[in-house]
Length: 444
Image (cartoon, rainbow, N blue to C red; front, side):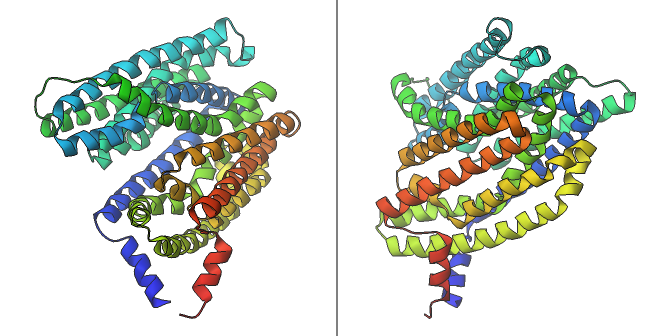
């Protein structure tokens, strides 16, 4: 037992772990503030208006994510690569070209969203004004995601995460408090405008920090452009971002199309609690990924198996404890949004079970990515999205928010089963809980 514990402590030691700790702290603060902001918004808007706003935000978020063109994620790697090489011209060229491309794509996405309302009639009349107004958010979402990736490429953890995860919800919470104190009614349209202003201010702060990083870390140089290479390298990231965004927002949109604003509203707290259940896995990802990448590169499969199983044991135990606490507090948590939201508590069990299964499968997604099998991870996401959409189409018309929760749970389970199968078959690694328990209890 002691050697395993010692290896696990070593895994989370050093500067990567310190960065992970800061990242996790920002993430936790952001989740707490965002959750409080959502509660206040639900209380001020009422159930139906909250559902209308949620559908508009989901549509804008999907298009905003697509409008990054994969450049936000590519920026992390490209900026770090060109800094290491001292290729300042290529670095400046990439930054300028990316900002321009995402600005054009964001405006195009906003125009498409307005067109979907005015000409294509994709949304019921009750949603149309809010969705059209939500087009402003498309540009904000795209720009914030690009700024985040660029700041992360410069190694600026605080300025990469804080604007979107902390500053934006804090500003929105302040705006909502002002509205509440004034006694003025809050409509979905007014809420979306406040969200756009908060996002714009957070973006401005992030861009100022990014500009300072460029001035401090990038010497003057003539910009060089490698558009063909950047386009080719960004395409896989765009595909992953598209599938991820669809997986995150599709249930809310399906509820808007197949149910009513009330059911769309009831699903929102469940969707917010789901990622909270994965906090332990998110915390492990930062130090685990580079360590396993190095071991896979040197062919040390046995050590990868040992570390992966230790991570599975740790994250599964932490996830089970966290999920139990959330389920126990679910009626109280949901009641904070409003009395009607308590009805969604039973549906949370579906998502909780799926996230426990997720943890028990082990860090399969990271193993595939670090072993240069990102294509397999993407195929698993596509399978999960298809499973979720098919179940959503079948269940949401009759079950509403609970049908969406079941569909989400099915997607999570499908994703993990596919990746676990490929990790076992192609990498010869079994990080799942049964093997981890057997290895941990076996005498050494």
